[in-house]
Length: 83
Image 1 (cartoon, rainbow, N blue to C red):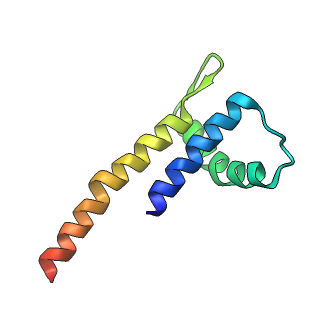
Image 2 (image 1 turned 90 degrees about the horizontal axis):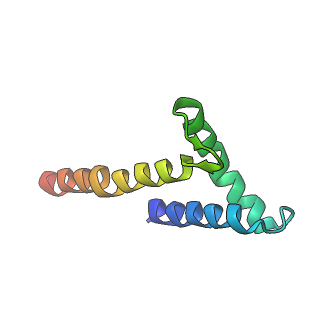
């Protein structure tokens, strides 16, 4: 559930980058603080900029989808087998 919430926070950050909301808004500040450090780390490892487009949020979304679909389900299956 937390991964799904974080995925939506990333989507909000992407939308914010398109519409340029007030940077002093507490909601905008919070979302940026939650997403920007992670996308910055991704950009340090992999070159993610192509012209004006930064693909780091997209890569982060793919990582979260992988975690949700593979890792969480695998751990759940292991847990049910142990029971």
